[in-house]
Amino acid sequence: MSTRTEQLLLLRGETLGSISAQSSTEEIFQNQTLRPILKLQNDLFVHVFINYAVKQKNVFFGLSIEKKLSYIEHVIQKDIKFRNSLKGMIIGLFTLEEYDTYIKNSSNLNKRMMNLLIERLKDNVQLLTI
Picture 1: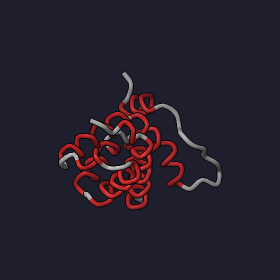
Picture 2 (picture 1 turned 30 degrees about the vertical axis):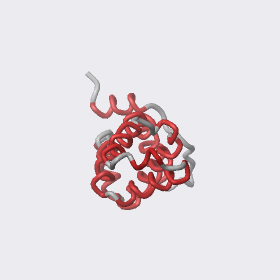
Picture 3 (picture 1 turned 135 degrees about the vertical axis):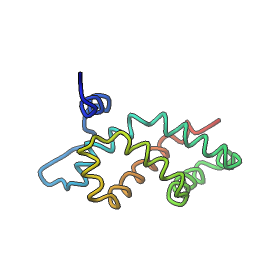
Picture 4 (picture 1 turned 60 degrees about the vertical axis):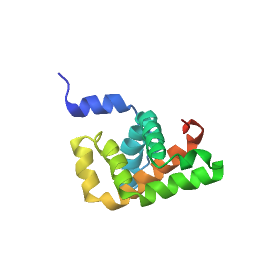
């Protein structure tokens, strides 16, 4: 029987991005943990964002592309409840070791996490329709 850690790492796949001897701990965490989780959860994040936009009276869907990009960034930065929900979807796929690393520097890692998620949603803006 495999452990939770083994199953999570197998599910997420390989490191995304380069890691070198000069890479910071945060950069290593980003490329080994955050990017693979965000890739794995991409479809879920798209659906969650669509659901959020629908609950916000569908304003998002009538915006121009430029305003949609701005809306995505604004919502994730300003709606703390929504942002915390998104963070939970990511943190829930951490191994125990990754969680220990995360809690040591959660503020900076949260910024990286949300910036990566914002960029991912912006890249998927065409999928954000009802």
